[in-house]
Length: 85
Image (cartoon, rainbow, N blue to C red):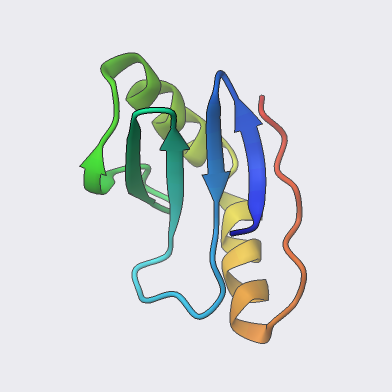
């Protein structure tokens, strides 16, 4: 599970050989969800309200590098780390 970013007790991961649509996996101590890229919408799972809004903003702000990582995954390349802010 490649972790591409961590902030506020949240780990953001992206996997190789994933299904469409482009998305990231968000993990905390008591929650997990899949969040779409570049929209930032929760596809499945549930995030606490404050975390959900922060993750949504983070995904939208970093959409370009997240999409680059999605394409890197398709090519089997190493992921780029994404800044927390």
